[in-house]
Image (tube, rainbow, N blue to C red):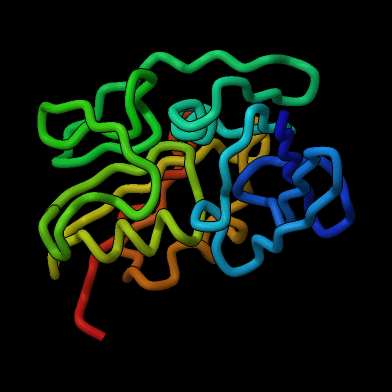
Length: 189
């Protein structure tokens, strides 16, 4: 049985967005550095353990791992929220994403052509590899909305979010009902 534990720099169990190491236990201990890319470094595990996962992280990781433990609870997938975009990621409990009207299950890399999506919503999942993939598949001039709970509601501070979205141009940052909404545009560099 392979067990993975997400840890921050201090060795505390943490959520995907804050993880710096993946500790794999399988009769021996292996440490995988997640500093410059997280999802692409994930391996086949039976159980993934973290703390204070965002809802989108629960849904997305739930497509890969049979058992995910958040603090001391086995997590359940979160019911999807309705967003209007060509692709939504993190808000769907039955697949990795919804592309147009189809539910699609994938992990990394995304099975989508470069510059083929003009609008997307990323709900409660932040990862360098995922945001690079969102940037890759977004058309020039395309828009992405990132929705993340704020720190007061067990989410993130805006400065923690900004480091994940540096490839995009930030059009607008707003706050509503305990959520940060960051509207991004893919522009020529």
